[in-house]
View (cartoon, helix red, strand yellow):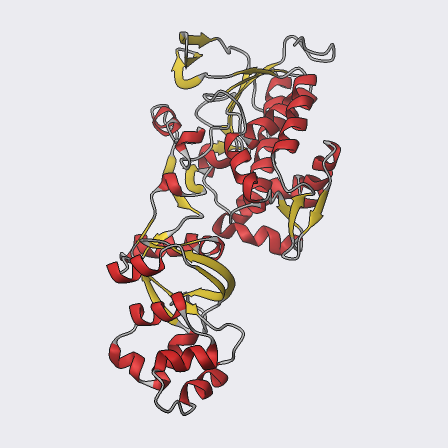
Length: 424
């Protein structure tokens, strides 16, 4: 498709990566009048975006903004400029501009009305093509050839000259390699002197090394209406978060686990394991639980008693036997405490390719203005390539969008300055 007449023939940008960050950077660049070529290794763009949307496309959140920004942990101050420039309300307005309505769920999560990613992606790609963005698929970036970019394609190696062009790298992290995010860019940047924090799993499950008996009986069982806390987190009392997750053949995974995955992962890295506390009865106060455990049970077994009085059965009952000794289970006071704070030892995160996202990436210190590589003027990075992380879903996407818009604006400013970095 030929570019609109408003596009400058001399202002050119290359975007490498066709996920949400790459598409957003391309949109900003094209809207700023640049001629944009987008390259991606896969046959089509947005593959991970589409997969994430299959379970309901959580695009952003309707939290109080201060609380929203706080969800980025130790990187909140680094991420905050992206969020200030493109906050959740602006994300919703942008989606509405694509002709897609949104609604706020009971948990504050924002979804497209159809709950799917495909209609949004189709409308977005139509806008980008109308703006003159040219897509080059099945182009796997292999680094530089002198000052040019080198790609592997089905027709062999292709070298693309980019002298005077801005380059935005939006290659994702290292989760879901089959969808294009494989972290293969890390050595390419390290060879150019770019400092990259190791890529590690985020929003991931963990191994608990269950007994064969427990795994065989309960793998795949959901744990609904429970609460989870990281033991020894420095708080006077453990801070429990309510939600749900699933027992797997090797451990645990699911939304409640993902919400705590960063501190759990870091604790394992520091000490070799992490202990989480599981509240099996978050809607019952400790005194009520103790009263029910102590209630006379006659000839009934303790398991039958717990099922009758507190609804503890199935996987919840199995977890008590898995995590407690016989002496602890037989002691009513210790059993009652365990029902409200059952210690569960986690040994390792699941492999990064199973994770929803990854942490690590290009360190902020390697960036000028939060977007351009100091060691490679004219080369900008966006999205999960940068060293930050967020809880799954809307928090992750919102920061990816904001990061990409910042990279796109910085690339335009660099082009407007004739390839000279403007003073900040």
